[in-house]
Image (cartoon, rainbow, N blue to C red; front, side):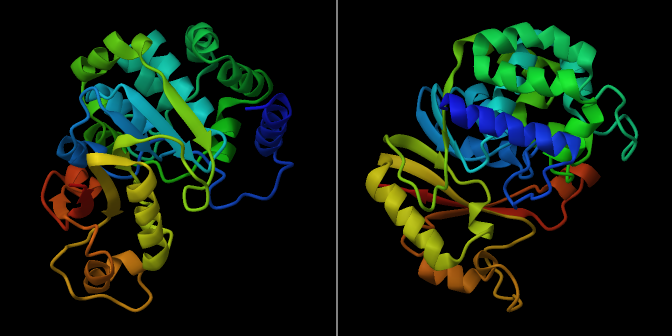
Length: 311
């Protein structure tokens, strides 16, 4: 990131925190955690010592992939704050206990919808800031400026999306947060990891490099089927290794066998049309527990993951 671009990004973030920057686009806020069940689909991919291209401004795709053994990760995201937030999480894992990590990042307290009073605590930030500085200096400058000027609640309310699920769901959808043992496993290898960050629009921009796996998260829900097909063709042609895999779709509360949909639904949820138009790319479909299943500990309507395997 160039000096001028970094300064502009920091100025925009600061203006957002103080309330003077009013325009917020659909992709300008950070997701505090993944909104899909990453732990539910990640084992369908061979990540051990493999390369991965992924999207996801929460960084959870990156952290779960490292937890599962990936070693060469490129994070491509339209949100320019993504890199800083992922490094904040990495520095926190390096510096904080499991209990402290949850206290710092979780929005909810022990009781759902009661605010966690330690969220973005400045005392806990002081414990991780030295490692943040060593791991990525730009991320340190970014968050050190915000924490020095604004109260934690202002940073979280104005820089981040509101739809953070309950704590039991966050732990259930992230392998590295499942329990203290899992967290400690990632903590033991966190100093060995690094990732490349590219700020851009995956539908419009080219990506340099070949990858064994590609995670598109829920991009399928924000575009039409023709546009998604064009993206898959581009990635297949330019970026996916032979024998590689793409997680091309994540659909909440959906079934691959359903032919029942409403005209105003997102295109990807019109399953018969999706099957037909993307028939060259949907080589596997898996039902996995959704956040509601995890929350209520009983099967409801599961989420759907669509996968492409390249021969």
